[in-house]
Every structure is written in structure tokens, then in C-alpha cells.
Length: 265
Image (cartoon, rainbow, N blue to C red):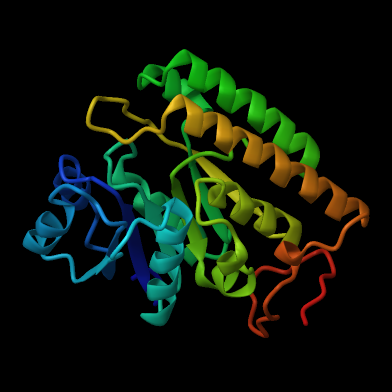
């Protein structure tokens, strides 16, 4: 805990047997209260290794539901356990768990409600071995997204994110896609709701065992990102009234004020 805030790390896993141990053992247990791993019907030994490591909460999907659905299960469980801060960390060891301290303190001290580990700040992505085509793809999509949303993020595609439970409780993340575009839909919701987002430089590692999506899935993902960004822009203009942008409720003790008025029905 930090300042009495319960911190839970979630690991949305799929075929992470080769990297799970390294990731888990570097999670700072001096501040992290609980760890949740949700396995999306892996075909390797992810679940067995998770149990051997002693991860208290291991949830297994009977069939593969998708990356977004995996995150939804993780967030639902974390909130049910009373988390105040939820850290989403990919168990493929691309992101260093040692940044959990920095990300958590920003939220626990009510500086920011959302913190992203950015691979782009500090040129960490290329230094870590990100393929050049993925870097170009990332930068082009991010530029477009910033124009459409009015935000100024260095990237929207990181798999390392920290949230105040207040944010997760108030946006309708359950309405989002079960696929990879979930990551961008939830950030679109957060930006539209008026929550500030911090970014910290995050070194990253690209290696054989780390997870990666195929070129065809990358193209599908990119098209989904463009679609979400356009919807966000039209919502900002008042042209559409998309269900994605309706808050679930107003928290009376919300520590971070929201600057825009949303339909909270």
C-alpha cells in the first residue's frame, strides 16, 4: 500500500510461460498488495507456472476471448477485491516492473489518476529493439489520435498502464471491444471524460519470447484505432452521441475533477 491505497497488479496473459516468472519476480511486493493473472486459454504452461509461483488470483478463460476481454476480467476482479490503484502489466517481460513504484506514487498522491509507461519518450522503443515499421506505425497512429482527441500523448499503444479505481469505476470499459483496440477505446473514454494522463519513460525489450501480433492483426488494429479516433472527434463536435462516452456514475469523493459535462444516466 501507499498512503493507505491498495495496489493490485493485473497480468493479462496468453502463452506467457517463457516470460511470466521473470516478470512476476520483479514486481515490487513492498507496495503491491495482490497480483491477478487472467489466462486467455493459453496453449502452453502459463497457468501451471502461475500456480507454482504462488500467484493468489489465477483466472482461466475456458476459451480464448481476446485481449480486451482478458483485461475486462482483470479489472472486474481487481475492483471486486477493493483495489484503489490498478497496474496493468504485460507478463511478456517487455516492460520493467520496477516502474510500478513511480507509477503508483503519482496516483496515490493524487497527482494524476492515470499513468502510462511510454516506450517513445527517451527513444526507448528503438533502443529496445522495436522493429522500425512498428515504430513508424506507432508514430503515425499517435499523431492522428492526438489530432482527433485533442490530447498530447507520446503514444497510445503501451501495454503498461496504471489507473485509479475511481477512473475504472466511472468509465464504461465493459462496453469496449474484446480485441486489441480495447486499449485505445479505454484511453479515448478517459480523455473524453476529462481525466489527466501522465506518462513516464519506460525502457522496453523486444526479443523472441516476447508477445507480438502479426502484420495482418496489426493492420486490423490500426483500422480500429482510426475508427475510434474519428468517433472521438465526432463526439467532441457533438455530431454523434456514442454510448462509449457515457460515464457510469459520478463518484461523490472523486479526487480528480472532470471538466466536461457528460450524460451520467
